Amino acid sequence: MSRTVLAALLLLTLPHAALAQGETPPSAPAQQDPAAAYDELVKAFNKAVSDWQTAAQAAVEKAQAEGGRMPAIAMQPPTKEFIGRAQELAAEHAGKDAAVPFLGFILKYASNERAAVKKAISTLAADHAASKAIGDVLPFAGNAMRFGAREQVAALLDAVADGHPDADTKAQGLIARGGMRLQTARTDEQRKAAEADLRAVATTTKNEEILAQAKDALFEIENLQVGCKSPEIEGVDTDGVPFKLSDYRGKVVLLDFWGFW
Image (cartoon, rainbow, N blue to C red):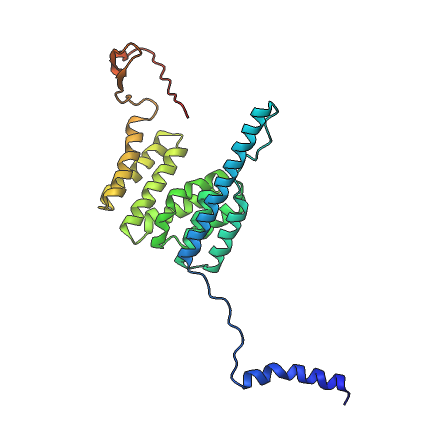
C-alpha cells in the first residue's frame, strides 16, 4: 500500500477515533432569546433611522449654507435590512407566539417592502389569530392595507373579533376592525357596521384602557363625521376678546389650524 493511500485512510478514520475516545462534535449555536432578539432589532432600527435623519438634515444645511441645490435625499427610511432580519427571526419561531412580535415589526415599520408585509399579515391570519400575543400587533394591522393587503387584514380582524377566546384580545380585535371599517366606509350601512363593532367592546371586556380606546373611536363617529354637529371650541381672538364657535352657528366658518414645527 502506498504512503499516499495510507495517509488518506488515517485521515478518514481520525474523526471516528476521536468520537470513540469520548469527544463530542461542536454543538450548534444556541438560539437567541426571542424577547432579547426583538429588543436588539428595535434598538438597531431606531439608531439607523436616527443616523439617516441626522445625515439628511446635515446635507440640507450644507446645501443651504453653500447656496447650492438641495441634495437628492432618500424619501424612505432605511428599512429593507431590518425588515429582512425580522422575517428571518419570524421564520426561526414559525408557528409559535414568539414569531408574532417580529411579524408585527414588519407591519409597523415597513416602508416599501410589499411582499414582506403581505406575507406577514397572511401568516398572522393563518397561524396566530387565536394567539393572545396577537393583541399587541393589531394596532398595526391596518398598515398592511396600503400595501394592497386589505383582504388579508380583514381575514385577521374577522378571526380575532369574532372568535378569539380571550375577552380583552377579542375587544382589541373589535376596535381594530371598527377602525378599519370606519376608515374605508363609503355608505351609512358601512359606518353603522363600524359603530356596532365599537359598541360591542363594552359588552366584551371590562378592561378600562380598552374601553377608553373604544370610547375615543365612538366620539369620532358621533361628532367628527360629515354632517355631525361640531364640538364647541372656545378661545380668545387677536384682540383678546373671548369667543365660542357656537357664536357663529348658521354662518360659514373657516378654521385655520397652524403652528411652528
